[in-house]
Image 1: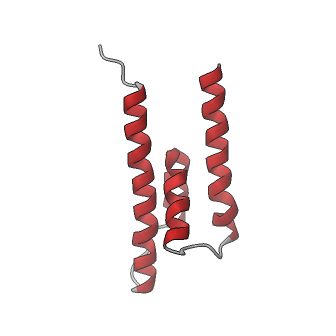
Image 2: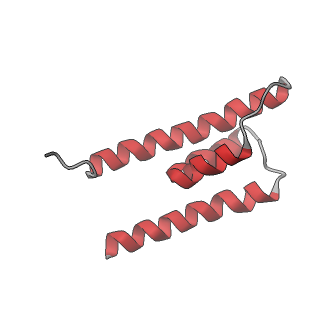
Image 3: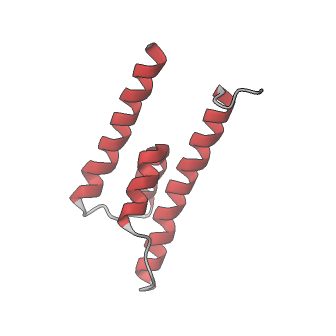
Amino acid sequence: MEEIFTVKNIIIYLVAINLIGFLIMGIDKYKAIKKQWRIPEKTIFIVTGLGGGIGTIAGMYTFRHKTQKLGFVIGLPLILILEIITAIYFIVK
């Protein structure tokens, strides 16, 4: 049986989830401008928590979206930092 958690698969996953994070910030900004149905904030935090922190933060500042909300300005980087610390812990262990 082939190993699922290979370095290659983890990198592919992280690239994909960060691309999704970046795109949802852009899509939500577009929908906000057009006064359309929005992507729930909970969804943005879930994508960040699943490893998409770099993408959501990059999207937040690229599209200037949610930069006035303290929960996003502090929350998204905090989640990313906790994920990095957790990853380092498991790599070293």
